[in-house]
Length: 319
Image 1 (cartoon, rainbow, N blue to C red):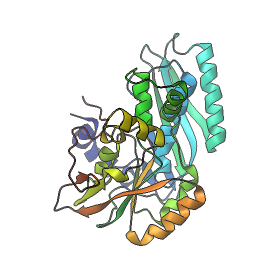
Image 2: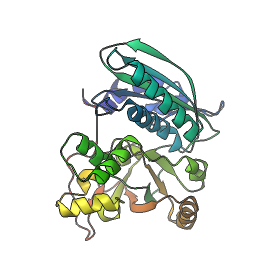
Image 3: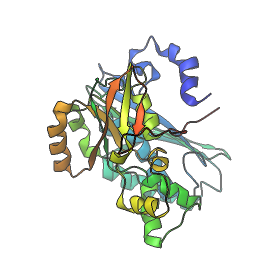
């Protein structure tokens, strides 16, 4: 049983008397009357980050992945709470100093403020972050329309290659290793896009568990499907060269998650405003497919229109 099955079976019914919970089927809690938006994320050593040799980078990664939940909803994060469990080996004075300095830099970069938390002793290293923002509206999941175009920001797959390098499954020249590791530890967040998303996005989510896993979640309560063209999914020049030279499969990299790019759908009538908006902000945007009727199964196709099978759509916590 994976995490989402557990939520559906044991906890979703508990939320039915609280409309602000969004039936536990979205990225955030949203109280429209109070204009309050909250997300909660827990990060476990060896599961959500590879190791703790660079605590300054790890803390940046998990903080960015947390506030990404708000950004993809069209909400600018303002406050965060952070709790951590660790021991004398992980919470050394040097490590704590590095964590503090990193948080200070991230606060300045994203205009957010630490507002509380908790620290406990444990031999299991973990962090929990609560992110808070304020907005009179959000971009919900499950609001896609039939024939919507599907868009994604930035590039996908670089973060997963960074993880593979940490696992010593790949190794390249120093500069190339450094490039992919940076993409793993420092996901690119488009905080200047938040409010502009309301001008065109019907539904949205950030890509954390994997492109196709998150696309499934985006429309999981709708009688709709999707068709995505693998050749349209954006990847960096660095990753493209490696995939070609080593004869790897593109789908194995773009489907693994940890990208924290924004995945959204929009009406075809919005194509011009989307192009203008992203050009003005200097953000890469790619149209990768479209929303289809629920009468057919979701499809991933190649540039010739041939269907591509995928065994693992993304990352899930299985219990």
